[in-house]
Image (cartoon, rainbow, N blue to C red):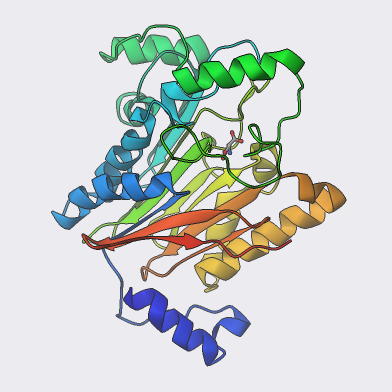
Amino acid sequence: MLARRQFLQLSSMGLSAIGLSAYKGKSAVQKPIVISTWDAGIRANKAAWQVLKNNGRALDAVEQGVMVTENERNCCVGLGANPDRDGYVTLDACIMDEYANCGSVAFLERIKHPIQVARKVMENTPHVFLVGSGAQQFALSQGFVLEKEGLSEDAKKEYEKWLKKSEYKPQINIEKNQQAFVPSRLSDGSFNHDTIGMIAMDAAGNLSGSCTTSGMGFKMRGRVGDSPIIGAGLFVDNEVGAAVATGQGEDIIRVGGSHAVIELMRQGVTPEIACKKVIERLYKIKGAKAKDIQAAIIAINKNGEYGSFCLQKGFNYAVCTGDNNNQLIDGKFLI
Ligand code: ASP
Protein backbone atom coordinates (compact mmCIF):
# COMPACT_ATOMS: atom_id res chain seq x y z
CA MET A 1 0.00 0.00 0.00
CA LEU A 2 2.97 2.25 -0.58
CA ALA A 3 1.15 4.49 -3.00
CA ARG A 4 -1.85 5.07 -0.80
CA ARG A 5 0.10 5.66 2.41
CA GLN A 6 2.47 8.07 0.72
CA PHE A 7 -0.41 9.74 -1.04
CA LEU A 8 -2.12 10.31 2.30
CA GLN A 9 1.08 11.69 3.79
CA LEU A 10 1.62 13.95 0.84
CA SER A 11 -2.03 14.97 0.98
CA SER A 12 -1.56 16.17 4.52
CA MET A 13 1.37 18.23 3.24
CA GLY A 14 -1.06 19.93 0.90
CA LEU A 15 -0.05 18.54 -2.49
CA SER A 16 -3.45 17.05 -3.19
CA ALA A 17 -5.10 20.33 -2.32
CA ILE A 18 -4.02 21.60 -5.71
CA GLY A 19 -4.96 18.27 -7.26
CA LEU A 20 -1.61 17.52 -8.81
CA SER A 21 -0.09 14.08 -8.92
CA ALA A 22 2.50 13.70 -6.17
CA TYR A 23 4.35 11.12 -8.23
CA LYS A 24 4.42 12.83 -11.57
CA GLY A 25 7.83 12.28 -13.08
CA LYS A 26 9.09 10.22 -10.16
CA SER A 27 10.15 6.59 -10.22
CA ALA A 28 8.13 5.18 -7.26
CA VAL A 29 5.68 3.28 -9.42
CA GLN A 30 3.27 0.92 -7.63
CA LYS A 31 2.96 -2.12 -9.92
CA PRO A 32 1.48 -4.50 -10.58
CA ILE A 33 -1.84 -3.28 -9.28
CA VAL A 34 -5.47 -4.16 -9.96
CA ILE A 35 -8.53 -2.29 -8.74
CA SER A 36 -12.19 -3.04 -9.31
CA THR A 37 -15.64 -1.80 -8.39
CA TRP A 38 -17.78 -2.93 -5.46
CA ASP A 39 -17.15 -5.78 -3.03
CA ALA A 40 -17.33 -8.47 -5.72
CA GLY A 41 -14.05 -6.89 -6.78
CA ILE A 42 -12.27 -8.63 -3.92
CA ARG A 43 -12.97 -12.04 -5.44
CA ALA A 44 -12.33 -10.83 -8.98
CA ASN A 45 -9.04 -9.17 -7.99
CA LYS A 46 -7.77 -12.48 -6.64
CA ALA A 47 -8.04 -14.07 -10.08
CA ALA A 48 -6.53 -11.03 -11.78
CA TRP A 49 -3.66 -11.06 -9.28
CA GLN A 50 -2.73 -14.62 -10.25
CA VAL A 51 -2.02 -13.31 -13.75
CA LEU A 52 -0.25 -10.15 -12.63
CA LYS A 53 2.02 -11.74 -10.05
CA ASN A 54 3.29 -14.16 -12.67
CA ASN A 55 4.27 -11.28 -14.94
CA GLY A 56 1.17 -11.78 -17.06
CA ARG A 57 -0.40 -9.11 -19.21
CA ALA A 58 -2.87 -6.64 -17.69
CA LEU A 59 -5.27 -7.51 -20.50
CA ASP A 60 -5.41 -11.16 -19.42
CA ALA A 61 -5.75 -10.11 -15.79
CA VAL A 62 -8.77 -7.87 -16.37
CA GLU A 63 -10.46 -10.49 -18.53
CA GLN A 64 -9.94 -13.36 -16.09
CA GLY A 65 -10.74 -11.18 -13.10
CA VAL A 66 -14.22 -10.14 -14.19
CA MET A 67 -15.02 -13.64 -15.45
CA VAL A 68 -15.13 -14.64 -11.77
CA THR A 69 -17.99 -12.21 -11.26
CA GLU A 70 -19.73 -13.26 -14.46
CA ASN A 71 -19.67 -16.79 -13.06
CA GLU A 72 -21.27 -15.92 -9.73
CA ARG A 73 -24.79 -17.02 -10.47
CA ASN A 74 -26.21 -15.13 -7.54
CA CYS A 75 -24.48 -11.94 -8.45
CA CYS A 76 -25.94 -9.22 -10.61
CA VAL A 77 -23.37 -9.59 -13.36
CA GLY A 78 -23.53 -12.33 -15.98
CA LEU A 79 -26.40 -14.72 -16.60
CA GLY A 80 -27.34 -14.89 -12.90
CA ALA A 81 -28.36 -11.25 -12.95
CA ASN A 82 -31.75 -9.58 -12.77
CA PRO A 83 -33.59 -9.58 -16.09
CA ASP A 84 -35.04 -6.73 -18.11
CA ARG A 85 -38.73 -5.93 -17.64
CA ASP A 86 -39.71 -8.59 -20.18
CA GLY A 87 -37.87 -11.25 -18.15
CA TYR A 88 -34.70 -11.65 -20.22
CA VAL A 89 -31.13 -11.21 -19.00
CA THR A 90 -29.22 -9.06 -21.48
CA LEU A 91 -25.52 -8.44 -21.01
CA ASP A 92 -23.07 -5.67 -21.94
CA ALA A 93 -19.28 -5.72 -21.71
CA CYS A 94 -16.14 -4.08 -23.02
CA ILE A 95 -12.38 -4.42 -22.82
CA MET A 96 -9.45 -2.17 -23.76
CA ASP A 97 -5.71 -2.77 -23.86
CA GLU A 98 -2.46 -0.80 -23.81
CA TYR A 99 -2.47 -0.29 -27.58
CA ALA A 100 -5.90 1.35 -27.57
CA ASN A 101 -7.37 -1.83 -29.01
CA CYS A 102 -10.90 -2.24 -27.77
CA GLY A 103 -13.94 -4.46 -28.14
CA SER A 104 -17.54 -4.28 -26.91
CA VAL A 105 -20.75 -6.24 -26.92
CA ALA A 106 -24.19 -5.13 -25.84
CA PHE A 107 -27.70 -6.57 -25.56
CA LEU A 108 -26.13 -10.01 -25.68
CA GLU A 109 -28.29 -12.94 -24.53
CA ARG A 110 -27.53 -16.48 -23.32
CA ILE A 111 -23.74 -16.23 -23.49
CA LYS A 112 -21.96 -16.89 -20.22
CA HIS A 113 -18.91 -14.66 -20.59
CA PRO A 114 -19.63 -11.45 -22.50
CA ILE A 115 -16.18 -10.12 -21.59
CA GLN A 116 -14.58 -12.93 -23.60
CA VAL A 117 -16.82 -12.13 -26.55
CA ALA A 118 -15.80 -8.46 -26.28
CA ARG A 119 -12.16 -9.53 -26.44
CA LYS A 120 -12.88 -11.64 -29.53
CA VAL A 121 -14.55 -8.62 -31.17
CA MET A 122 -11.36 -6.69 -30.43
CA GLU A 123 -9.00 -9.36 -31.69
CA ASN A 124 -10.88 -11.15 -34.43
CA THR A 125 -12.89 -8.45 -36.19
CA PRO A 126 -12.07 -5.06 -37.73
CA HIS A 127 -14.80 -3.60 -35.50
CA VAL A 128 -15.19 -2.33 -31.96
CA PHE A 129 -18.84 -2.94 -31.09
CA LEU A 130 -21.34 -5.73 -31.84
CA VAL A 131 -24.86 -5.83 -30.42
CA GLY A 132 -27.88 -8.08 -29.97
CA SER A 133 -28.42 -11.07 -32.21
CA GLY A 134 -25.37 -10.08 -34.28
CA ALA A 135 -23.17 -10.23 -31.19
CA GLN A 136 -24.68 -13.60 -30.27
CA GLN A 137 -24.18 -14.93 -33.80
CA PHE A 138 -20.55 -13.79 -33.69
CA ALA A 139 -20.06 -15.44 -30.27
CA LEU A 140 -21.37 -18.75 -31.59
CA SER A 141 -19.06 -18.49 -34.60
CA GLN A 142 -16.17 -18.15 -32.14
CA GLY A 143 -17.11 -21.35 -30.32
CA PHE A 144 -19.15 -19.93 -27.44
CA VAL A 145 -22.07 -22.04 -26.24
CA LEU A 146 -25.67 -20.87 -26.12
CA GLU A 147 -26.75 -21.27 -22.49
CA LYS A 148 -30.26 -22.35 -21.48
CA GLU A 149 -32.91 -19.69 -21.18
CA GLY A 150 -34.11 -18.89 -17.68
CA LEU A 151 -33.27 -16.97 -14.55
CA SER A 152 -31.15 -17.73 -11.49
CA GLU A 153 -33.04 -18.46 -8.26
CA ASP A 154 -32.40 -14.98 -6.86
CA ALA A 155 -33.26 -13.23 -10.11
CA LYS A 156 -36.48 -15.24 -10.44
CA LYS A 157 -37.63 -14.21 -6.97
CA GLU A 158 -36.73 -10.60 -7.62
CA TYR A 159 -38.50 -10.56 -10.97
CA GLU A 160 -41.66 -12.10 -9.52
CA LYS A 161 -41.63 -9.47 -6.80
CA TRP A 162 -41.07 -6.74 -9.33
CA LEU A 163 -43.87 -8.01 -11.58
CA LYS A 164 -46.46 -7.41 -8.85
CA LYS A 165 -46.11 -3.67 -9.30
CA SER A 166 -44.18 -3.55 -12.59
CA GLU A 167 -42.96 -0.14 -11.60
CA TYR A 168 -40.50 1.35 -14.00
CA LYS A 169 -38.17 3.29 -11.81
CA PRO A 170 -34.70 2.51 -12.99
CA GLN A 171 -32.69 3.46 -9.94
CA ILE A 172 -29.29 1.98 -9.44
CA ASN A 173 -28.68 -0.33 -6.46
CA ILE A 174 -32.03 0.14 -4.85
CA GLU A 175 -34.10 -2.39 -6.75
CA LYS A 176 -34.53 -4.61 -3.73
CA ASN A 177 -35.05 -2.67 -0.58
CA GLN A 178 -36.14 0.67 -2.00
CA GLN A 179 -33.81 2.34 0.41
CA ALA A 180 -31.61 4.65 -1.54
CA PHE A 181 -28.00 3.65 -1.99
CA VAL A 182 -27.91 0.95 0.64
CA PRO A 183 -26.89 -2.12 -1.32
CA SER A 184 -29.04 -5.13 -0.57
CA ARG A 185 -27.64 -8.52 0.38
CA LEU A 186 -28.32 -11.61 -1.69
CA SER A 187 -28.86 -15.06 -0.20
CA ASP A 188 -25.15 -15.92 -0.50
CA GLY A 189 -24.24 -12.83 1.49
CA SER A 190 -22.93 -10.85 -1.48
CA PHE A 191 -24.36 -7.50 -2.47
CA ASN A 192 -26.73 -6.61 -5.23
CA HIS A 193 -24.85 -4.65 -7.88
CA ASP A 194 -25.15 -4.73 -11.59
CA THR A 195 -21.62 -4.19 -12.78
CA ILE A 196 -17.99 -4.94 -12.28
CA GLY A 197 -15.34 -2.66 -13.73
CA MET A 198 -11.66 -3.55 -13.40
CA ILE A 199 -8.46 -1.73 -14.34
CA ALA A 200 -4.91 -2.99 -13.93
CA MET A 201 -1.27 -2.20 -14.51
CA ASP A 202 1.05 -5.17 -15.05
CA ALA A 203 4.69 -5.63 -14.08
CA ALA A 204 5.74 -4.21 -17.44
CA GLY A 205 3.82 -1.02 -16.62
CA ASN A 206 1.09 -1.59 -19.21
CA LEU A 207 -2.56 -0.79 -18.52
CA SER A 208 -5.81 -2.50 -19.48
CA GLY A 209 -9.42 -2.42 -18.35
CA SER A 210 -12.67 -4.37 -18.51
CA CYS A 211 -16.28 -3.78 -17.64
CA THR A 212 -19.20 -6.23 -17.62
CA THR A 213 -22.81 -5.84 -16.57
CA SER A 214 -26.40 -6.89 -16.85
CA GLY A 215 -27.29 -3.19 -16.71
CA MET A 216 -30.13 -1.97 -14.58
CA GLY A 217 -32.45 -4.53 -13.09
CA PHE A 218 -35.84 -4.52 -14.88
CA LYS A 219 -34.62 -2.10 -17.51
CA MET A 220 -36.56 -1.38 -20.68
CA ARG A 221 -35.87 -4.10 -23.25
CA GLY A 222 -33.00 -3.01 -25.48
CA ARG A 223 -31.66 -0.48 -23.00
CA VAL A 224 -27.87 -0.23 -22.91
CA GLY A 225 -25.98 1.87 -20.38
CA ASP A 226 -22.44 3.19 -20.20
CA SER A 227 -20.68 -0.08 -19.38
CA PRO A 228 -19.94 -1.35 -22.92
CA ILE A 229 -19.28 2.14 -24.30
CA ILE A 230 -15.58 2.92 -24.69
CA GLY A 231 -15.05 6.39 -23.27
CA ALA A 232 -18.10 6.27 -21.02
CA GLY A 233 -17.89 3.05 -18.98
CA LEU A 234 -14.19 2.41 -19.61
CA PHE A 235 -11.15 4.11 -21.04
CA VAL A 236 -7.47 3.25 -21.11
CA ASP A 237 -4.61 5.38 -22.36
CA ASN A 238 -1.31 3.65 -21.76
CA GLU A 239 0.55 6.96 -21.51
CA VAL A 240 -1.80 8.31 -18.86
CA GLY A 241 -3.95 5.83 -16.95
CA ALA A 242 -7.18 3.86 -16.90
CA ALA A 243 -10.67 4.59 -15.59
CA VAL A 244 -13.88 2.61 -15.24
CA ALA A 245 -17.35 3.68 -14.09
CA THR A 246 -20.39 2.21 -12.41
CA GLY A 247 -23.81 3.58 -11.53
CA GLN A 248 -26.48 5.28 -13.58
CA GLY A 249 -25.23 4.62 -17.10
CA GLU A 250 -27.27 7.32 -18.80
CA ASP A 251 -25.59 10.02 -16.73
CA ILE A 252 -22.11 8.57 -17.04
CA ILE A 253 -22.59 8.65 -20.83
CA ARG A 254 -23.67 12.31 -20.63
CA VAL A 255 -20.29 13.33 -19.20
CA GLY A 256 -18.20 10.82 -21.17
CA GLY A 257 -17.15 9.69 -17.69
CA SER A 258 -14.09 7.50 -18.09
CA HIS A 259 -12.57 9.43 -20.97
CA ALA A 260 -13.02 12.71 -19.11
CA VAL A 261 -11.11 11.27 -16.14
CA ILE A 262 -8.22 10.25 -18.40
CA GLU A 263 -8.02 13.71 -19.96
CA LEU A 264 -7.86 15.31 -16.51
CA MET A 265 -5.13 12.89 -15.42
CA ARG A 266 -3.24 13.74 -18.62
CA GLN A 267 -2.96 17.25 -17.24
CA GLY A 268 -1.30 15.89 -14.09
CA VAL A 269 -4.35 15.70 -11.84
CA THR A 270 -4.44 12.78 -9.37
CA PRO A 271 -6.86 9.90 -10.05
CA GLU A 272 -9.06 10.88 -7.13
CA ILE A 273 -9.29 14.54 -8.08
CA ALA A 274 -9.92 13.62 -11.72
CA CYS A 275 -12.80 11.34 -10.69
CA LYS A 276 -14.12 14.04 -8.35
CA LYS A 277 -14.17 16.68 -11.07
CA VAL A 278 -16.15 14.44 -13.40
CA ILE A 279 -18.63 13.48 -10.66
CA GLU A 280 -19.04 17.21 -9.91
CA ARG A 281 -19.77 17.81 -13.58
CA LEU A 282 -22.42 15.08 -13.51
CA TYR A 283 -23.89 16.55 -10.32
CA LYS A 284 -24.11 19.98 -11.91
CA ILE A 285 -26.02 18.57 -14.89
CA LYS A 286 -28.42 16.53 -12.73
CA GLY A 287 -29.17 19.19 -10.15
CA ALA A 288 -31.76 18.10 -7.57
CA LYS A 289 -32.27 14.77 -9.39
CA ALA A 290 -28.71 13.72 -8.45
CA LYS A 291 -29.96 12.49 -5.09
CA ASP A 292 -31.92 9.72 -6.84
CA ILE A 293 -28.96 8.12 -8.54
CA GLN A 294 -25.52 6.69 -7.89
CA ALA A 295 -22.47 7.18 -10.10
CA ALA A 296 -18.89 6.27 -9.31
CA ILE A 297 -15.58 6.19 -11.14
CA ILE A 298 -12.30 4.55 -10.19
CA ALA A 299 -8.96 5.32 -11.82
CA ILE A 300 -5.26 4.54 -11.78
CA ASN A 301 -2.44 6.48 -13.37
CA LYS A 302 0.90 5.43 -14.85
CA ASN A 303 2.54 5.75 -11.44
CA GLY A 304 0.20 3.20 -9.91
CA GLU A 305 -1.62 5.85 -7.88
CA TYR A 306 -5.30 5.11 -7.65
CA GLY A 307 -8.42 6.89 -6.52
CA SER A 308 -12.17 7.06 -6.80
CA PHE A 309 -15.09 9.39 -6.34
CA CYS A 310 -18.81 8.82 -6.26
CA LEU A 311 -22.01 10.78 -6.00
CA GLN A 312 -23.54 9.11 -2.95
CA LYS A 313 -22.26 7.33 0.09
CA GLY A 314 -22.24 3.54 -0.27
CA PHE A 315 -19.82 2.85 -3.09
CA ASN A 316 -16.68 0.84 -2.43
CA TYR A 317 -13.90 -0.63 -4.52
CA ALA A 318 -11.27 -3.31 -4.12
CA VAL A 319 -7.55 -2.62 -4.45
CA CYS A 320 -5.01 -5.43 -4.80
CA THR A 321 -1.24 -5.05 -4.80
CA GLY A 322 -0.23 -8.43 -3.38
CA ASP A 323 -1.37 -11.91 -2.32
CA ASN A 324 -2.21 -10.58 1.12
CA ASN A 325 -3.03 -7.07 0.12
CA ASN A 326 -6.50 -7.04 -1.37
CA GLN A 327 -8.76 -4.64 0.43
CA LEU A 328 -12.05 -2.84 0.12
CA ILE A 329 -11.96 0.96 0.26
CA ASP A 330 -14.94 3.27 0.69
CA GLY A 331 -15.26 5.74 -2.16
CA LYS A 332 -15.29 9.41 -1.19
CA PHE A 333 -18.61 10.94 -2.07
CA LEU A 334 -20.07 14.27 -3.04
CA ILE A 335 -23.58 14.46 -1.62
N1 ASP B 1 -23.54 1.33 -15.27
C1 ASP B 1 -24.43 0.22 -15.38
C2 ASP B 1 -25.49 0.58 -16.38
O1 ASP B 1 -25.97 1.70 -16.37
C3 ASP B 1 -25.06 -0.20 -14.10
C4 ASP B 1 -24.16 -0.34 -12.90
O2 ASP B 1 -23.05 0.13 -12.90
O3 ASP B 1 -24.59 -0.93 -11.90
O4 ASP B 1 -25.91 -0.29 -17.11
